[in-house]
Image (cartoon, rainbow, N blue to C red; front, side, top):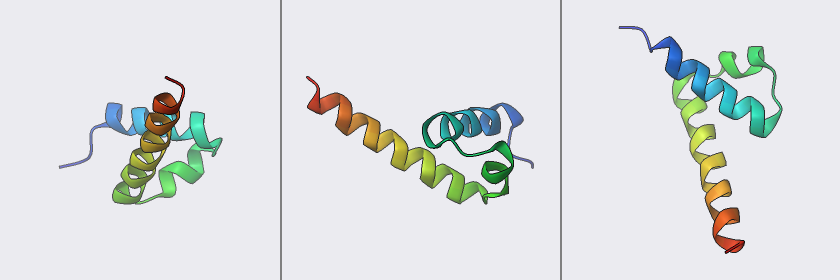
Amino acid sequence: MAYPIPKIRTEAAFIAYHMHWSLGDILELPHRERLAWVSQVSEINRRIMESEQ
């Protein structure tokens, strides 16, 4: 079963927005690596939001 295209788009958009990477670079990442980057950026955003409260 293939990974759902809408989820790939969401992950790619998130990483591209925050990391300013090209779509090609993002899509070359293995799925688990892409998810790890999404997780790391989310954690950074969470810490920033908490520090601003």
